[in-house]
Image (cartoon, rainbow, N blue to C red):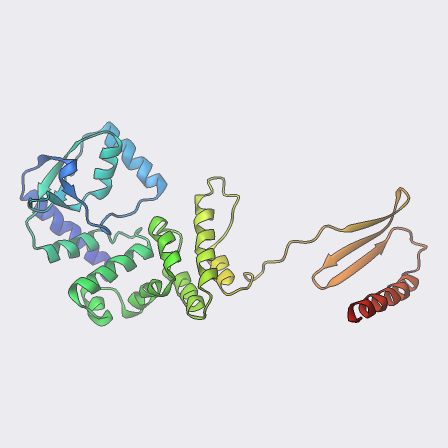
Length: 290
């Protein structure tokens, strides 16, 4: 609830400052984009927004900081600007908001903290605020309204290997902070390669439009720990069929560390064959020991 309050407060502040200014048309090429400020959208959200922008005029101008020699720093409206570019637009309506740089960073972060913001983006934003303002986690908790336990969990992303971060920057929705904590433990235990593999598999599953690839966060944590997820079973091996002429004589079925033999002819003596197998196995063991 505190976090939702921060989100609403930031949006209200930006809206209040925006209303105090006069919208103007700005060249998109003059906009300076700060990494980390753009809120990621799901493919569905992005397609819906693009269709809306293509068909309708811009109702809410983007927010920019006062002009510098390099241009206008973009405070909010990153997705609208990006989609305007894709639509071939060269200008966009904007309102100048005159606030200090440090205030702009805080406003941009909290304005992006919508309920759908993925945990990885929350982590990136908190990490940036921590670095910019020299806050420890306790101070960060007080400023953000998040509980200390929530911040600690989000900060578990920090312990993931670089390869995992590279994937998550492009696919921030695929991993939540709870599963990230499990992967972080695996990474600390020396299984960084498996962690990167697990995150890569999550990205592959998310990109599979036909949903034929199923790989969950639970699967990812299990993979990183070198184990199968609870309840999963190894793929069953195809039965081996022994023929006697054109007829089936026996079927061998492998189940884990067992081999089951089913004879097609009910008159065949399994006991006799068990004795033969015993002799055969002893001979094979002796060959291996020689």
